[in-house]
Image 1 (cartoon, rainbow, N blue to C red):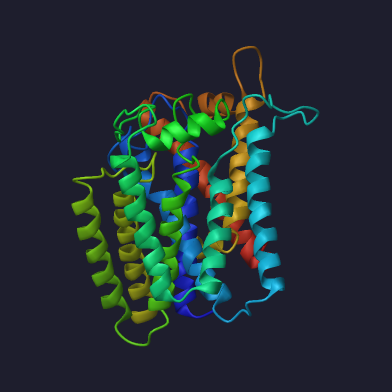
Image 2 (cartoon, helix red, strand yellow):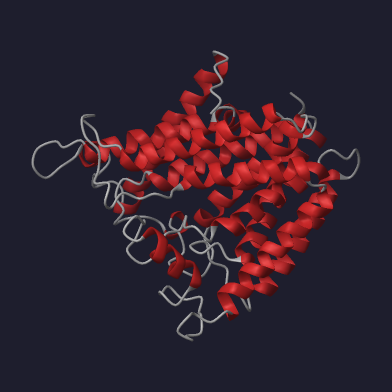
Length: 362
């Protein structure tokens, strides 16, 4: 595996580790602000994680399909992989421990992280197989501008003017409420909603285009840094008119997060390809089985929460209170130490899988 791909694996693994870290706090009442999503508008380090993964999916699409024939067999494999991802996501939403039963079909959440990855992978792969880079860039720009115009300027059927606020007079929330109803993450919105999937496709396309940049022979680091700066300028300028917002995956959010992903990839690429440093191998191990480790972490975490111990406790709270809550650390530090312990466990799993040459493709 050449260093260029290794840099992508390191970034992928780092992203999965960050996902697990922010998803497994010991107590949600005590979390350091950078490990939480922005309440609505704004950007925290946690908000970078999911768009980073979609960005990496885009790079992976470029490398996986750049020499693949535009044939039925290729499309079949793409569709099957997409359905697997969507199926795993639905399983996580439905599953309850003690396998005989499932959550209420009337209220279970339909959307989710893996479902969005599956849909974005499907659409982006098909676009890549049928479009050159200029067309992909045009599609991405059209999505971002069209999404801004829809959410910012198209009035609702009753004549009400749209807003970007967390309310039903926001087009993203309005459409999700109309179609998904009770099958949402929150009663009033879903961060992986239907219409916000369109700009997330643009996040993936940005990765595809960066993958093409990485195939050039010279000045890759400089090119990546310049692209990152351009994305920052465009994103923060658009933020004035369309605020950076992960929950609705705003167009400015796509540009700024793609800028950060490009910049961090440039740093990793410089360390691994230019300076030839042995950097971030443990993240590479996780990145080689990224979806498997993420799925297992979500499955086990949910099982811990839903496995009761006594009347007022579950396995998660029992372990946290028994092993991590003490007088030596603050509540937030104890909560963080629990999350870090979970992270170390899955990093160890990634190492073992890599050493045993076990690579599970979803």
